[in-house]
Length: 106
Length: 338
Image (cartoon, rainbow over all chains, first blue to last red; front, side):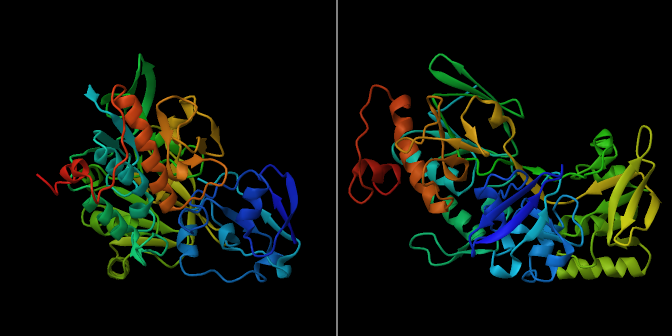
C-alpha cells in the first residue's frame, strides 16, 4: 500500500492508500476521485488522466516512455511537470506522492 | 424518414460486429458515426498500435482489425452515415425516432449504442474568450483554405494536422507555428519540410510557447503566447488554427433518460438493454458487474443485443438459434449458397 494525495483544482485533497502495482490513474478512478477521466482506460491514447506532479516526486517517477510526451501535447494546459497518471506505477518509492489534478481534462 | 430494424450508433469494432450479427439473423440495420471514417477508437486513436488479445488473431493493428471487420460485412448491405452525430431520440408508439446532426431521421424499434467513450470532438483552446471567435477567425479544422490567402495565420499544435497545414498555408499566407515543446510528433518528412520553411522565413516558429489570450473586437487582431520561462509575446494574427487532436464526449446521449454512471450506461447482461426498452448499449460504453473494456467483450455483447433486437423487430416470428457451419438460411445470407 502506498499513500497518494490527489489535490483537485479547487484545492480539495484526497489522500488514499493504493495497492502497489496499480497506476496513479487507477488509484483515482477506484476511489472516485473527481477530475481524472481516463477515457481510454490506461492505453496512453487520450490524455484525460493528466496530472501535475509536485517537484520533489518528479525525479522518483519512471521516465516518460515514447508516446507519453506526444499525448501530453493534447492535454489540457500541459506544464513541465505534467504526466499521464496511467503511466505512473504505484510503488514504495513514491509513497506520499502528491499530484495536482487540472481544472479539466479536455 | 429511414425505417430500419436497428440503428447502431458507433462504427467501431463493436458496432461493426453487432451489424454483422443483426444481418446474419435476418434483420436490417444502419450505422451512424460522428467520425468521417469507419473504425472508431481503433482507427482514430491507435491505427498503428498492435493489439494482442483478439481471440484467434495473435496480433493485428487497429487499422487491420477494422479492415477485417469491414471485410466480414461484405456479404451484407449496410448503410453507413458518417460525419453525423445522433442528436435526439424520442419514442413514438412502438418505435424510436432518431434525429442526426445533418437532419436525417430514423424510425426504428431498436437502437444499439456502441459509442465507445462518446463521439470524437476537436480539443479546444483553454483560455477564455476563444469561443467568441470560434468558426469566425478561430478554427479547429480547415474547410475552405482560400479564406487564409494573404492573411496572417497562427497554427497551434505539433502533430501531422498542424504541420501539414503550416506547410500548405505557407504558400499563400504568413504562417506562425506555435508548439509547447521543441519536438514534433508528425511524420519526419513533414517535420523536415517545416524546418526548411522556417529557415527561409516562410514560417515563424515559436516552440515552448502556449496560448494565453486572444484579443480583438469582431475578429482576432492579436494573441498572446507564453514561453515556458514565462516570457510573453504578443503576435499579430488574422486567424488562429488549433490542432490538438480529438477528445471523446458523451454528447447528447447523456440527455436520453438512460441510467448513466461515470460516463457509461448501465445494462442487463441478458439483452444488454438499458433502462429504456429497445435501447441497448454494448462495448466500452456499457457497464454491468464484471464489465471488461475489451474488444472481445464488445463482440459478445453485440451478439446478444442483436438477438434481443429480433424480438422487437419481428414480434410475430420466433428466433431460432443456428450455426453458420450448417444453417442454409445463414449461408444464404452470407452469399455462400444459392
